[in-house]
Length: 206
Image (cartoon, rainbow, N blue to C red):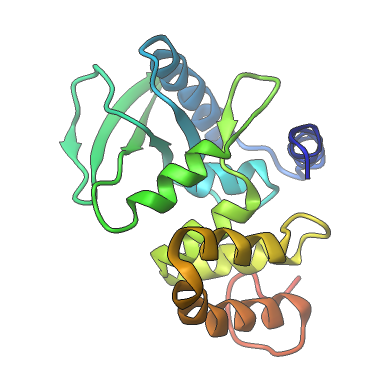
């Protein structure tokens, strides 16, 4: 998809959200505030994690805002993140919002940098990782909720280009990286397509 296609996709998802919540509105405002600071400090950034899932139509609420970035902010952090980056608390109205500012310094750094490079800019000023990169980053995280999120994304019509997921993994990690990923990714595709079933939050439409 082109950047305009991605922008229209997010716009449709936000318009069609059945139950917009104060939590999500507050989280988006926190992302706008901290993203504005990053832009002024010439730091590349993009929304990822649960807030990106919200932008792509997921009903799952999130307790914090995850943002991947190219460098650290000038804010005073609450505490460092063990995989690189810092956690901040922003006051948005009467709410305190935790923002995890992720600057990976481990073996997954190249994936996060590539996702950041391909991030799309929305008309409201937010930057967000593409659905394909969200799938890849969540697959690398590997927690059950991340796998559930991947299935949700894969179930959405024309949202995830599955061949592009493969292409991006091979570009960064080579054929061996794809071979290590292939079986797990195909299982998630089968779950999304209804070819197999397992218990999980988003595996069923009910």
